[in-house]
Image 1: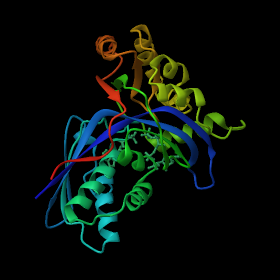
Image 2 (image 1 turned 180 degrees about the vertical axis):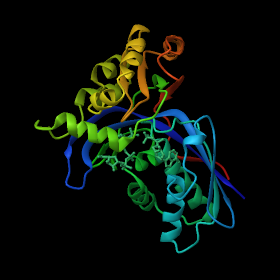
Image 3 (image 1 turned 90 degrees about the horizontal axis):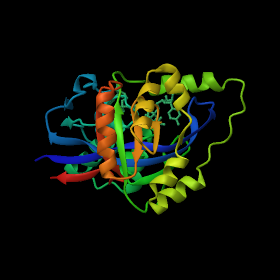
Image 4 (image 1 turned 60 degrees about the vertical axis):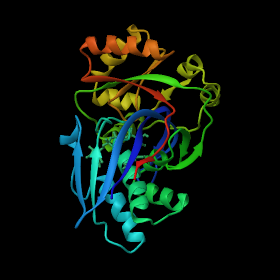
Length: 299
Ligand SMILES: C[C@@](CO)(OP(=O)(O)O)[C@H](O)COP(=O)(O)OP(=O)(O)OC[C@H]1O[C@@H](n2ccc(N)nc2=O)[C@H](O)[C@@H]1O
Ligand SMILES: Nc1ncnc2c1ncn2[C@@H]1O[C@H](COP(=O)(O)OP(=O)(O)O)[C@@H](O)[C@H]1O
């Protein structure tokens, strides 16, 4: 018997970053929107814990115990005093090291899949606690939809969304490491007074109304200057999207995936076509959000 869970990618429509905390993390006002690009995580009983992965970026995914899906299975097994004896297969469609929380998605997916396979019947709170131990973005991958993440991003408040937003994502030729981008943020703000991160009310209103023009006027990402500093060519991708008529363009989280907000599904296709021919990115995908969080689709 196997269980398969589908888990979405995310884009951060606002990412406000505070000063580095004593523990090295940064307080955030992180407005997550789940989008319809998915990994599928399948767990099957096995003699020992084993991870396999298929998909365009599969060669960049670690298959050892550092894989977030393996860590999730071990964390749940540890709490319930059992062995994490499962084969975890990841059908990966979310770009790796792209600022779209692909690893976090696999962590949340494996957790939910193992919970169903083993019949542990952990409460939502318990699953969210394990997610927060695995990484700052993992709780949101479980929950999906739209949410404000505070603390290091793990404390979630669900947000109302009044419609579907149409996005184009441009994948870059290489990845960016999240810690390296936060370190670059620290370097760029050195000597400056970094304000407390707060969610933008106009942005929350735009989400609630489902108004793409208002959302376009309100999106922001405090990590964008750091991502551009480490990966200057991203400015060319952003410019290509602007020329193609996107309402707004920004780096997704720590990058280097760039995200383009468009008025509707048809204009998303047009912006995608222009980006594909611009020669400024590796590949282009269209996806709408909000999308549901981790969901058992089989088993
Ligand atoms: C930046 C964001 C925006 O959603 O995502 P990505 O763009 O990478 O997907 C997240 O904050 C990434 O979350 P996640 O990838 O889960 O990070 P974690 O494993 O918790 O932390 C990895 C490293 O990122 C830095 N980090 C992360 C979160 C945070 N609030 N402050 C930090 O300084 C720390 O250096 C930490 O050691
Ligand atoms: N299941 C996983 N899928 C992808 N990357 C993983 C996974 N588990 C651990 N990682 C590690 O996490 C790093 C960040 O990957 P990812 O979560 O895709 O990007 P981001 O943090 O930018 O959203 C990868 O470079 C990889 O070393």
